[in-house]
Length: 232
Image (cartoon, rainbow, N blue to C red):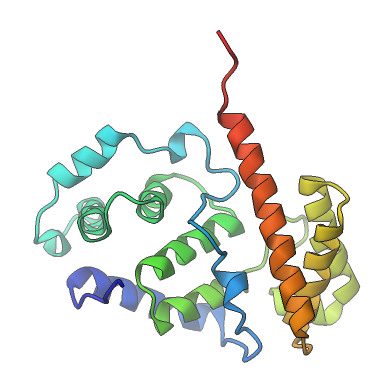
């Protein structure tokens, strides 16, 4: 079992996460299904993170560890403080996917997608499993999808104004990715009801979790095929 370390690293991230909460707004009592926030199984990099700018080599990891010092949090230069934070993560948790993603996210230039932002918050909660990181993760899920043309309002306002439009967007975005299969309808219906605060049955929760597992398996199969290079 991981324990929460009372060290500068944890305190820094605790302050960071608490600082995010007023920006994202208050949570909802209906957001209690941890399965939506923390998928079962190991941590996976989200879509759009397979390019060279998102990949860390073993040499990158070794260089971070070699340059790490115990007083990293006292560094005045922001870049060195960030690098020290990464080194502390590696020393505390090891070279695991969650740590690699956080490092890659911090080093990657440019705007991030909603899924990539959520993945970083998920990675932090997997490392520091406490109420603050879970609360922050729940709030990050409220971020609007700014990659959709015309989307600028908070998600809960969109759902209240146009629930059918929200359902259609959830459905069509998954059909585009996975095809017209039953699982995408199950997920889209579940998410609409859940985010509206409607009461969900045990059967609906089980069907949603099974559907999400199937979709993640499709993602894993697709990633496996992409990793298989052409034969020489």
